[in-house]
Image (cartoon, rainbow, N blue to C red; front, side, top):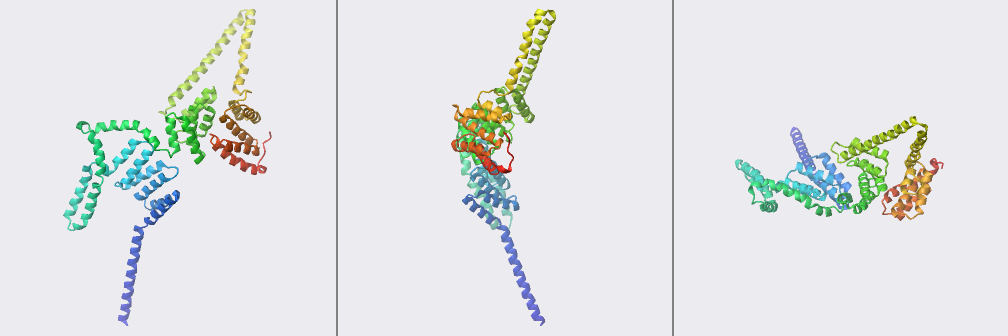
Length: 486
């Protein structure tokens, strides 16, 4: 009986050990290939165009393996494939990929491609130069010799021979790539003493000569293309691109900012003011909108608004901001003008007081001087408010002042006159805004729909479309809302 028990126990131990080894193998295989299914699934999502789902798979990998270069690389590729390319995130992921795997050549190439899309040719070349395979052969062969020496000292030379071959074979391929670089360097070979110095001047002309080619490389990104056209002074070509951006991404602060700048340089100051106010929250250059608004107010002789805009700009502007000096100069100029006006107004008062003491006849002549000094008062009051002449500017002033009925009548009067199409759909949009303020949502819906249907390519179509959705909802729930009394 004892022998039987021993045999049974031995069999049980053998089975348990086999099961344990099987489980250990399963766990080892599971951990080593855990990333594979998610990478495959991400590729499937990419093929279907479900880019956010693909990114989710790669993020799941990175949550467990923060240094997985392949996941970073694949995520960067997705950011470039998306309908609206996210160049900044793509670049960041490419850099993380080669940070954790310095030999990943495709990551360096990806980062270079992103810089080319941005139109930064020199930066692209810098990224390619970081790739170890593009460095001189001396830098690559040195570590290879050290690796080959190590196996010679070991007893098992056959096994390390394979990694030694792979290490040497990899640099063998890039030699074709450096060959192209060496040919470029060979042209500068006649000057051996100045090998490093000529390289810098050569890169600088490339920046000036090649942006023209880079422009054609960014046709898919209307935002970047619009910025380039704006920088080149092609304002009419840039204007429709901001509408395209806003159609895809309503409320984009950057698009509003650049649309305002574009319209300013086109001389369309009403549109510029509208867009710049919406672009004030743009993180990159939103504060510059205050300066452009100040320029618009200066042209409209709205001194108080100009001062406020300049003060707002200087409050946030950095010491080396590009508009700080002209803004400070303009404020100083305005202050000097006010001071000189005070001195000028004080001088006639003293001159008028002196003759009054001399004789009565002189005092009679001085009387007109007093009336003349009083006469400008009504003129000043008229300058503060809009005139009765039907213009877009006057109607806008009435609207801002809360005189909705007067503004509404002026916009209506403008629509009955011969005005430009731009002014016509802007006036229609403003009428919709007034009706919404007056809680006449049905009339507001009608005006917004007119802009959307009759002027779909206009600058205000996107704004009208959003306002239309709100007005339709408000009309349906009008009974629940208080109605403004006219």
